[in-house]
Structures are given as structure tokens and as C-alpha cells.
Length: 201
Image (cartoon, rainbow, N blue to C red; front, side):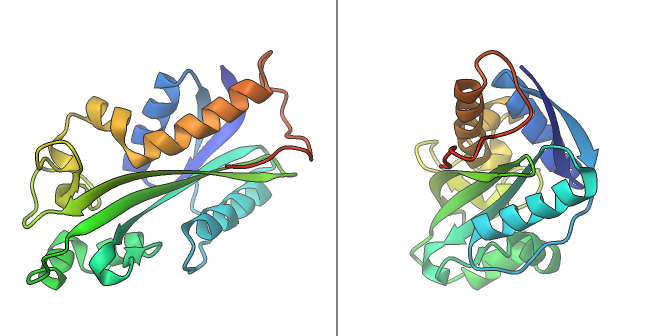
């Protein structure tokens, strides 16, 4: 299904991963390498919805925007919605230093994917449970080298083949919900708008 929709991001890694996932799910979109304003908020969904609103305001076309965060239990959910900034400032090594003597290493990677057509902003949440590794493993982007999804024998996201990660990731789970919604809504093809009676996940 070809959507008359832009996937908006200025992060080439995220663009590549997200569009690959969407294509696997049977959806093709255009890409807008666009930087949009971001608010600081405790709620990841609120951050993504604001960015979607700003992206639509600039493009005047339906948009998909996705934000992700690493929520660490023992740090009360930090870095959470601030993950991008925290990665840029202290990186994986900084998180590992903070966690050096912490035994509870449980964490959740969350994704908030937003579809916005100018009338409705619909948010779809995906998450994967796991834990923080004791050292970075694998070469990848973001916090992938220190996040070990449950059930994979201690492998980090960064140690997985990209195609396998794309099948089990938090981002995949959010997009699965979004695509399911759009396919159910537009079984005869994308019509361009979402009616006022639509709900969100």
C-alpha cells in the first residue's frame, strides 16, 4: 500500500530502519529529511505528537513521526523521553558508568509512532522488555549496544542482524499497530484523511 504520507526525521539511521520496517509491513511512504521542533516532556507520546503537529504544519501533508526512549527501572525511567539528548551528551559509556554498581538492570525500550493528517494525531505504542548490559556489545547507533532484549541469551540490539532486529524491536511493534489500523481503515487504499470518529492505540 502506497501512502500519500511523509515519514519525517533528520536521523538517517532511524529513516533507514523505519522505512525498512514499513516496507516489510506492506507500506511505502515518502521521506522528508526534516528537523522539527521538539518539546521536553515526561511523556514520550506527548513529544512525538508535538513533533508530528510541527511536521504537518511545515509540509501540509499527512506525516508519520516516531520517537523512542530507553526507560531504566532503577533510574526511575531515565533517560526515557530524553534519550536522544542523553545519548548525545554522555552516550552508552555514560549510562554504563551510572549503572556500574546497580544490580537491577531491567529496562524497556519504547516507541511512540504518530500518524497525523491535519485533523487527527493518532499515537501507537510499542515496547520491548530487557536489561542494560554490563558493557557495550556490537557496533550500532544509539543505545542499541547496551540494551539486551529478553529471551535472546544476552545479545544486545547491536549484535542482532538488522533484519532480525527489525522483526522484534519496539519500533516494529509500534508500526505494526499503526499499519494494522491504516489497513483496517483503508482496505480499498489510502484516502488521505482520518475521520473524527477514529480512535488511537
